[in-house]
Image (cartoon, rainbow, N blue to C red):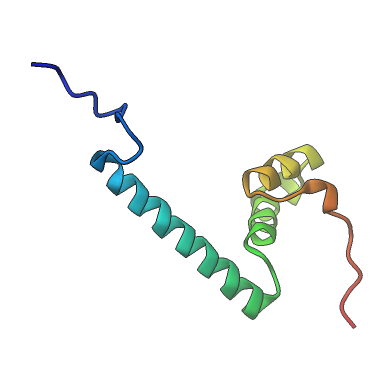
Length: 89
């Protein structure tokens, strides 16, 4: 009898992937909800909050720009669009 390889499903529809799909859907919903709430309550995106949190936790509250860019990339942001923004009126 052939041994089943649980780490390498045979097809994308393999039922062994159902828990992983459920996790991905839940993660996406939670991430969207957090982003929406941060935008409404604090005018910050989740990515901006994540960057501010990284700065707050960094030694002397400083990070090299490439560290922030790496963080932004992980969050799906485009670091080339980052520039100081004028304060709102």
